[in-house]
Each structure stands twice: as structure tokens, then as C-alpha cells.
Length: 171
Image (cartoon, rainbow, N blue to C red):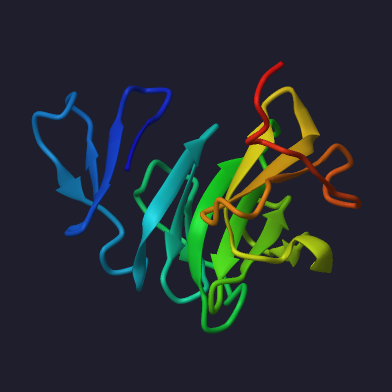
């Protein structure tokens, strides 16, 4: 994955680690190697906050452009982070964690320090991605890798969910 911050710094997550470039990609410097732990395969940069999803049920958070990271407590044991999304406010992020092919949605409103489960039982089924409406923090969309499972959306921040037919023929 790749992300850009407000200063034009490039963040690059590849198999070999997490890297940062302050010179438009001419040089890359590895960041967080000693702090992050079991580096996963996704991350997000939003409004001064860099969050890296890990393969041990945690996330690593940096509020200083990758200079240092704080690793969260385990959000969900025996899981890994599948997807991350930012809410329209600075402090709100979402993470989908997988444990034996069941994607569970978590939310933080304190820049990743603490996480709470959002997903209700009726949608906890192989969900791998989360999207947040940038203009409405209460509108979330959960997607599955299983094409037989329709997406769900909420307009009230996860209190209730509605499934919709994403594969319907436009008419």
C-alpha cells in the first residue's frame, strides 16, 4: 500500500516493511521496525495519524509521521487486521479483524488507543472491508470477499444495519 501525508511524505508498506520517503521517493527509510511487531498488510494515513494493521490482533499508531509508534492492546485475540478506514473526524478510525474467516468491525474514537466492537451478530460473516462516508460519520459500508454475501450499510453508526443488493441490474 501507499499513502501520502499533508507534507508530501510518502509511506510505503511492502513485504519487507514500512518505509517513508521525505524526498518524493528518491530515498526510502524503514520506520517502526522495532516498535510495530507483527506487521500486517494494510495501513492508513489520515489527518496526522498513521495506523498500521498487524497480524496479531493489534494496530500500531503514530501521531508524528512515523517517528515513533505505540502498539495497541490486543483488539481481538487470534486475529489479524483485514481493513482500516478513517472517519471524517480526526480521532475516529475503523478496523475489520479476521478470526477464522469472520470479519468483525471495531471502532476507535481516541486515535487508536482503545477499540470497541461495532459489528452486530447479523452481519458478522466473512466481511473484509469497511468504508466510511467522508461527509457522514454515521454512514458505514461493510463488504465481503464472498460474492454470495451482499454488502451491508448503516446510517446510524452501526446501531442498525441494512443489507442491499449490490449485484442488481441497473434499471
